[in-house]
Image (cartoon, rainbow, N blue to C red; front, top):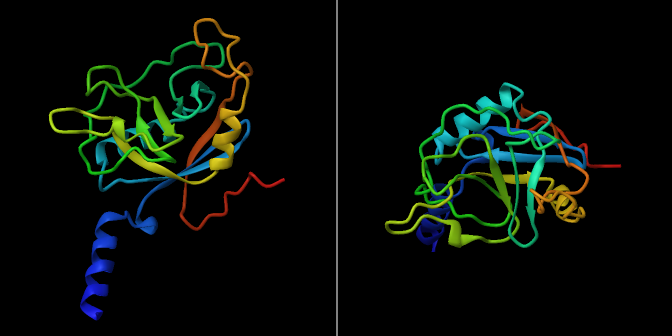
Length: 194
């Protein structure tokens, strides 16, 4: 019995990233704070890329330009007036890292070219395992998860959409990222309380 428990705990440790060792970022939006944990062991290039954008202030002022209920919310590329921001070079696709596109995970947005991701990312609203890598099929690279603020994510989903003809899935009133900065695992960044 003890051996089975030891094997269970060992397997659990191997499949679940350790919270204390992973970087975290607090994404302050117009509707509250979304705190994310990043999986640097499983997606080192993607995490380094995301942190470089966050550390440089790139995400400050970008909007959630794509909100699809029952699927994803996406940000990281456009200002409130839908001007596309200039990005760094595209990164390699790390979708074959064993992580799945489950509710609350962060993944990189990209074009049909698997290695085209730059600054845009999305948060999965449901388990979107069809976005995972498969045999001879690149997926969308999972590189983190929401650890606090899924209620804020849901507030974003509830915003009315359809006003912007070219971007019909964007909220009518822009929902901006005001600030995205690294925080320590123990920091109390809970600005969602009234």
